[in-house]
Length: 254
Image 1 (cartoon, rainbow, N blue to C red):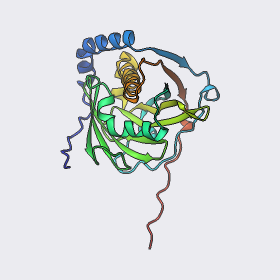
Image 2 (tube, helix red, strand yellow):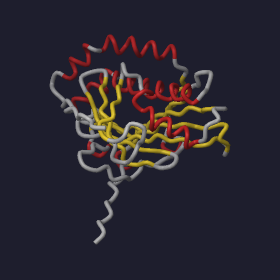
Image 3 (cartoon, rainbow, N blue to C red):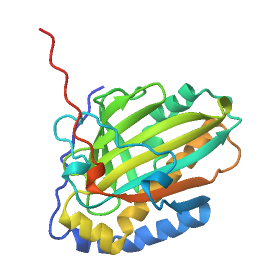
């Protein structure tokens, strides 16, 4: 089906005042989510303490990508994970639920996903999503990796963050009765304006946290769980030295 691509809003000097103006609604939404959604928050003391210890994937992000090397300020490695039990689904089936329901799993009041390139019920490398966010910025992401147990998105020019995020499904103790669904990101602010708003106000980071907690808990309901599971969050701050070089593009045949 055809898609209409919207122009992403750029950073402007009024970005911080606009974010302040929307702060009241954001605060109410965050308070409600914090009361309604079980979570456990952890801060990793070092990369060695982070579980699972995963390097930043060295992928080729393609044109107009805004990966973590291009951003400003602190680089954060975050992991959100939830344990799905007794769903009767294979890992592949759980992953397909995310493929097919990306636009429904995230809370639209905070971040509304709309596919702008690709097919509605399939997720493939090269697919793109427009994201309408609470605050003065919209963003866009592209699928840069898709495998049997995970897929990865990279932010594109104009997104408030610069980085990439991987969605993964793994079995717990080798059985399909227990699956751990993980959302793992490596990101920083895209520029000084966004960094000032995110670092000073803290709203952007909190909204992102609530988006992915909601995503995982809605996924648990869609997968068939009768109760709302706790989402475990782990965060660490990384040095620039951990950033990989971009993966080289293989030469064309002939």
